[in-house]
Length: 112
Image (cartoon, rainbow, N blue to C red; front, side):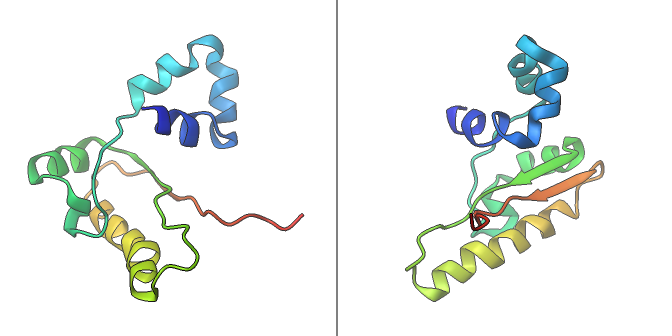
């Protein structure tokens, strides 16, 4: 939950919702978000079939920020995590009946 708060909820991406909900923002977000532990190196991103089915029926937004930022990683590992991983998540997302948004967050930074 701490990682979800720091890496998703408190980012610029959700600034507008923070303004609308004010001090109730975190309660609002908690009522909408459920972090799911998985492994996107596996089919259905490592989620049990029953939970995968429930997620596919209920979820309407996916925010994927998972990546390997070890820039000297072995090529096969980096390719699997950073390229094939998002592909697996998108393949899983094709089952989602209510999907409105799939957001892939990159670790890249603009040069200053």
